[in-house]
Length: 343
Image 1: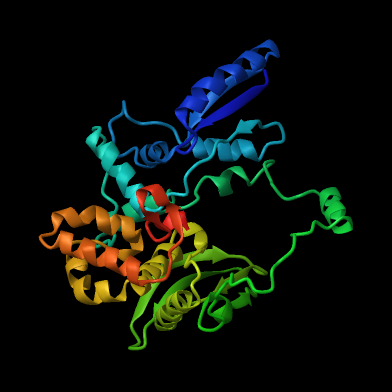
Image 2: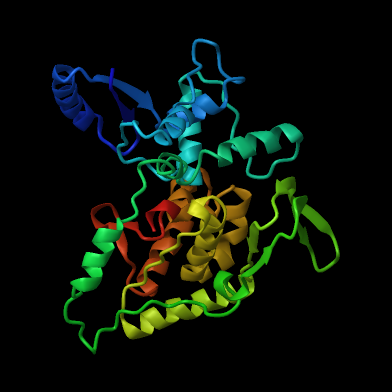
């Protein structure tokens, strides 16, 4: 019997599922098509990743891995609804909610100090970011345009419309000392094992990835961004946006939000509020409030600080003093700098 699998995710409202799913089931049943559901929500993926921490009754299968295998088969039919690309704040919030519901899950270790914490961090890191799309797009859900569509577009190019010469809109990029400028690649000459290590200026070596197998002909690509140059670039960009009277908006998409995005995002938040971090940076760090988690994460934690109201007022003043800031939700005062995954 033919089968359709309908996924439960985070962003698709349950109202839509409850209203649309019965319609799909009704049509499918008349055609002799079986319909099943799978939970690939963030919470579902967390529970499936830690079967050794939860009770036997709480355990669920790894639906994403199952669908990933199905996606590679020619007869797979998967209806994947929109899912979140989980940032660290979203991941931590989901963990806390599950823990409150009775799941004995480990906390997300920001700085692992033991083998167990390193293992926990590695497992959680496979869940955060855009973990779903790369798996389900690996097979017959490939979104690349077919050749006929590409040829049509070449023959009948679409005009983007008139662009005013006096438009102030522009995209600012570093050009030097960034990932693009520093990128280096090497073609592996033979089957071997390699590791990834960071060598500090003092000669200290830190293993970032333990030895793993590579094949002859594989390409290993690496790059680095200099934080000092990034900070200077961001400071100048904020100042220029203020001077030219344009909206300031940060758009980051590096390594699917697993490593670089939150870190770079933190530099953006610092650059927009230099006076706040100069005066209250130590207080925020002591309270575990990091700009890497966005302005929203900091503001949510200020109530627990004795001088929280004072710091909140400083951030509000920073928004007033800076260039106009792109808003994600103007009614709720949520700016482009509130959450890493909102950029």
